[in-house]
Amino acid sequence: MPTLPIECHLEIVKYLKKDHKTLFSYLLASRELCRVTVPILWSEPNLANPKLVQTIILGLSNKSKKIIKEIVPKIKKRLLFRYTQYITIITGGLTVGISKLIQSEEKFIDYYDILYVLVKLIIRSSKDIKILEIDGYERLLNKEFRALLIYAIKHKKALVSLRLLNIFIDVPKEQKLLNALSKNTRLRSLYLLNNRLGKKAGETIAQILLKNKKLTSLNISTNSVELEIQGVEALAHALSENKTLLSLTLSNDSLTSEGGTILANALYNNETLTSLDLGGKYPNASEYTYFNKIRMEGATELANVLRENKALTSLNLSGNRISLGLAPLLDALTTNRNLTSLNLTDALCINHKLTWVNISYNHFGRNGSFFVETLIKNNTLTHLDLSQNFNSKIKEALTEACKNKVDNTMTLLL
Image (cartoon, rainbow, N blue to C red; front, top):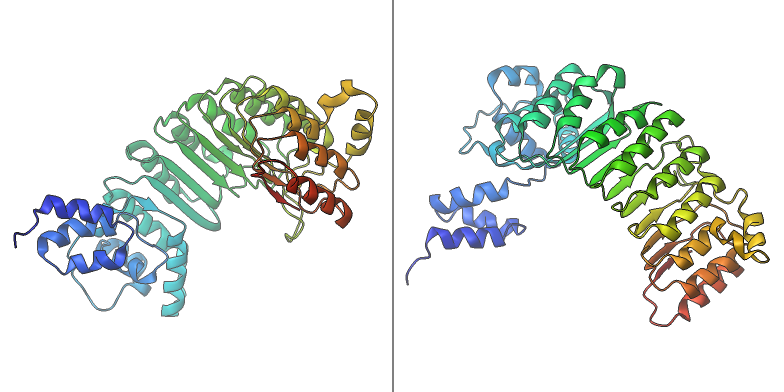
């Protein structure tokens, strides 16, 4: 029986990319198959596995090993491959893997030191790092990590997604990092979660949006202080000018009603954004510090936008206290049809592009009848989250309205 050429095996291995059990059997078949399989197995490794973290540690230089000597394996093994050169994705799982390793070894060592030397090794040796995600466990970005991030942003040509989680960034001191982000023309996704960018976060991000013309997804969530109106205005201007951004998340950023109105006005001139998340922290969370509060004023302006904007398909306004001032506006609609533009619900009836809406935790009270009308009139919504807004009687009416819709494909959450 003739053997398959190595090119055929390569295609098989690519097809089995997610089937690690079968791929491991390939490692033992022959040297040639081993060489083909290792790059596939290590392209997207589960870095939460402490054994894989140990393997990466073995590839460190002697100088780096001295920094984390407490957890360097005692048994000296010679690695058959330089595995880190094949890694294309660094995820927050690396932090988990390091934590597990420290706990299993019962060693008292700062995981941040380990995280730095391992991320540095991977970035320096990887040929095609595409996604870089770092979870700092609420630590301040130090100069070593800053230099490493700038290096990756400038020199890693395949890098398309950067995610910095729980790393505190002192904006005035990080101009070099922010400039590198502005000048990068390859990043498609930028995720900055809980970085404590401060009041001037809007201006900071606006600079990036105005200069970087390739970003399609931007997530700036959970700032610890209220965004300055000046910063929101700068961000709104950048949003109206930007023609590539598809998804914007500003959840838990202490956005005010004035800020919500300013952002809404920017959407009149934006024809590309398809997803907007202005959600706030849910009530089951430990505190309400990071709630967005666009309230009725901001929601009203968004309602006007939804009637005109033909691009937006996903909107999250959960936890924004929209109920304040909503009742009189809705009551006015019963007698004055000229006020329909002030009603978020009516905007949903008119808008035929929006498919996903989350306005949970806004406590709408007795105004459920207007949402029943929305369910009847709107035939494009596929997801409507109204949870934690109504009493049981209104919930029953909403459920019944949803059941009675012809060709109903909507998921209704109450």
